[in-house]
Length: 592
Image 1 (cartoon, rainbow, N blue to C red):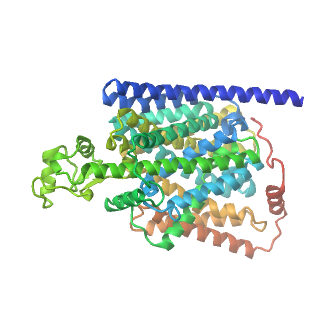
Image 2: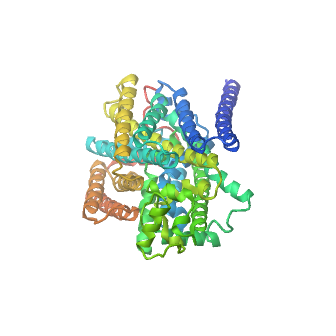
Image 3: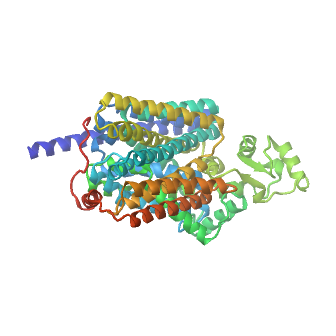
């Protein structure tokens, strides 16, 4: 029996490797064909737009082909995703979270602040919390908290917090992909928003977490290639600035440029940066989409290996993105510095017309308008401009602008746009699935006594996907929110509403009342602080408000527990089993 199982496992792995090789070859051939079209002189707009649309088609096809009606596949990918691929997929989700703050990758230190918090949180999620979820056999972090604190009020609160943070992230991921299509391919915003929303549904709807994880793994591969190819091309051409990473001369020059353009915000002091690091780490470590990769692995050890792989690939892809942003900033500055406003490269005028670059503080449509704009600032006709006079809108634009700034060709532009679209879709679909799991499994199944039919649960899941996708579509079309604000809000909600209760879950003296106090205190602290903040438009402000919630929630829960003298044998038994047990704690899902 053991030999037969081992042989079947080897056959399954060989079949999986063959499918992965086919998908990878398909993507590579498509991108190679785009490069060939670029070399033979095909229209640049077509060559630049074809790769991202093929990427959308490929990811949608991958998700659709993985359709399943089995609960074990829909909610946990059958616990069969190899650790290396689960970590690769998780890296795509986490890097997508960092894209709205991309300029910080190249213009700020990684030792403190939002970027440091992301990696600390990823390490905590991948090396401890994720393996803990896999060990206990739960499908999500909200299910673990609902099993630990079983009153109806706390369960509704946990499920609501996970659903809210996941909805915000789904909208953020959709916006990242839509903005990439609009800014880098010239697509109509309404069309791009509809396409991304429909693709997200096709990926997450038929196959659930199985489709999401494999699509995210493919997105990580596209991102590695998309960010790495321009860097490799510049290196081959001996045009890559020396010291582009971590404190080199080019890194320092790029950081100064980004600061002079006001693309990277000014630091608010060491205490604020440390607070941002802590709040971001707590928020990311408790995000349901980030923890989802762990529940797809075979066991706790596989989950930890997936965490290590996710941390490694997250750092690698983030470094490639940082290098691309820095190289783009330097290339733009060198192409425009010392030039009069009427003799700038045509790509600068085109970007300025779309509002992506300001020339002397204005968006202009051509050389004559640029000359008038600079004359209004005191420049004489023909006078050279300084690098600070030509300012990009943000780091996201610089990331996509590198192939044009460095004259790498339309195919490289299309490949980099594909990377941004793929990462946005990875974040959107993982967040959609996390929100749907909170409602379809944690609420409908566990709260109703584990009696609902599988078909009804999956129907609720898919209805939730449609509702959240529609909200993300509206947000993308309206353009009211920015991806950065949505990600910061999601991290703040997760940190303030989930982190205190998760900490109490390890304390035998905490019961349902303590968890409810922590949940309510965190929510009141967070939203009260946000209401009093004058300009909550930076992640540091959201982080400080989240820390108010964490402190208030933790204090309420702790004081309530210390004031309670009643013994809690059920809580003590749960904690012991959670930390020292070696088997699944919850009753197996009847639909699995």
